[in-house]
Image 1 (cartoon, rainbow, N blue to C red):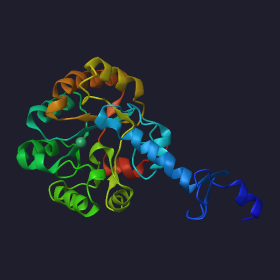
Image 2 (tube, helix red, strand yellow; image 1 turned 90 degrees about the vertical axis):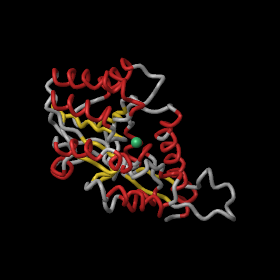
Image 3 (spheres, rainbow, N blue to C red; image 1 turned 135 degrees about the vertical axis):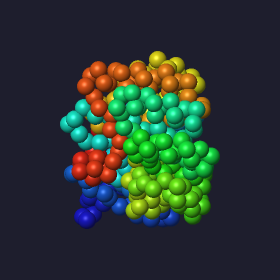
Image 4 (tube, protein in one colour; image 1 turned 45 degrees about the vertical axis):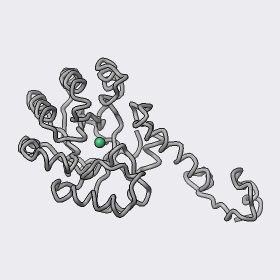
Length: 271
Ligand SMILES: [Zn+2]
């Protein structure tokens, strides 16, 4: 690197040049970034993305967040009118079973990201999910927050769930994974996130608002998140039939995230 270009690339955050290691340049499509700045942007993105716990969340995952984690599955790149409904946190009979009936009414397939301890409590409901031909994915055994859990216990918890959920799909609870956790898990799983969050878990959001949000943001290939949990039960049972009805009327089909979908279709890296 020429001296001139080094100078032009001094990082504004590197205020203590004696103690700080030299920052390096990352070139991408003619653009230049500092790794330091990349990390800052990434931290901001993850903070935005993970404010769900504080109920300040994004109904539509913006492309720049999807670009920061290009190895995750955010949506399916398809020309077909198809949507990918996903249900997190079950199985819980009081809500998962009515969901199965609704999906059956619309000839819809879906993907259920199951919590291991709920499978232990409700094995019959889990069997019904599988018997109906839906896909299942690992959502850890105890619905762990990756940021708040050391790596090894986190991996053990995933493995504990994997004994019950035979699947190549993994979705981290709260969307929270440390980088090392993500790096390790994506060797074994397709890490499935989403591009549309229904907000069915949000007590400040009405069912109408959740429905309108899904209608506004869902597009061909969208992966949409709902929760088959008691907390979301009333809202989900209100909005799910409306979502199924609305998009069926528009000619959409509802598909599960099968290996065929994940491997034959080119997964979109950006929205
Ligand atoms: Zn969850």
